[in-house]
Length: 404
Ligand SMILES: *Cc1c(COP(=O)(O)O)cnc(C)c1O
Image 1 (tube, rainbow, N blue to C red):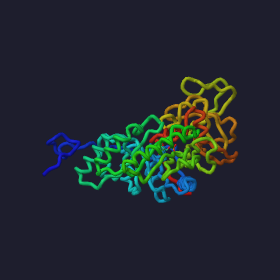
Image 2: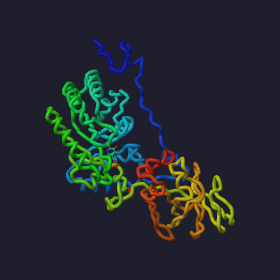
Image 3: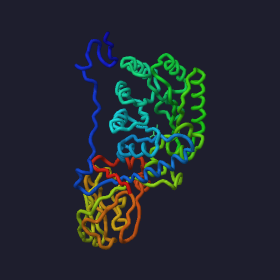
């Protein structure tokens, strides 16, 4: 007897109608890099941050959140490092991201949190990923796929919306969802999770946890108990002991950014972006630099060009606003950031030469001193959050992994 594949029209063969394949664009790799602009990823600092979170989690597991290519750091290398250093699970947003990590040889559980699977349940089973579900339809489709492929029951985590207003089953619909789980033994409840709306300020954490505990109790009353209950992102993991439960899901803190001011001073930045001065010119008073002539020299000035622009993830919002480090000192960005290049005023920095290192993010020690441009500082200048600054670094910037 042939079994009808749940994703194909009746009678269609899986060979004649290929299921969608997941394609991933490639990032520039170090061996292709001619341009000196690069992101250095400090793996020792990454491991240090994991240890800080493990210590803080005090017995709860740490499942590292590596969505959006590991917050821009390169998910595969970050995942390998964290797996070896004792992270017991990983979380991603997209099915595609989960597949990428499995194909890179990652063995620990991978939770796919985004909740969208495009009905590609076969990919979930094939790659042994753990989906987050919140809708009875998802449970039915998943159960069909398990039966069709004669797989073992699949573990899922159920997400409850306790106040984020984004994704998850609403508490009033828990009974229906629970009934669907009971009808489908192919789908096994392993985890129960929620997500905080205001973990950075601490506001509402207790209310959301109260609702989460009520949800957990009502499922338990139906005979459904989850062995892994989790809620905490970085901010909640660092600040709220009650939120730590069975496991914590930190993202940004692993990359050395404190999710709100002063929450942890022990974290060490993981990404550093460096380039070089590739051109230098003397501009007389009144001469301008860059598109639109938005900056004019008020005095005779030295202007250096650095080959990183908005297409690399250096926001145009830093035009006439941000800084770059040269020789250990801060040089202001002058004119608008263009697609591939940025100009800086080095008039006050003695001895700048072609080929000098220019640091756009992170620390620099130079002959004139030492300083650092933090992700938090750049985010403040742009009126955004550090998450956006890190994930904006584009695939044109090769990542170099450093084991100091
Ligand atoms: C992104 C995300 C996290 C991690 O958040 P950070 O603030 O970066 O620690 C945790 N849980 C969910 C559901 C997320 O989407």
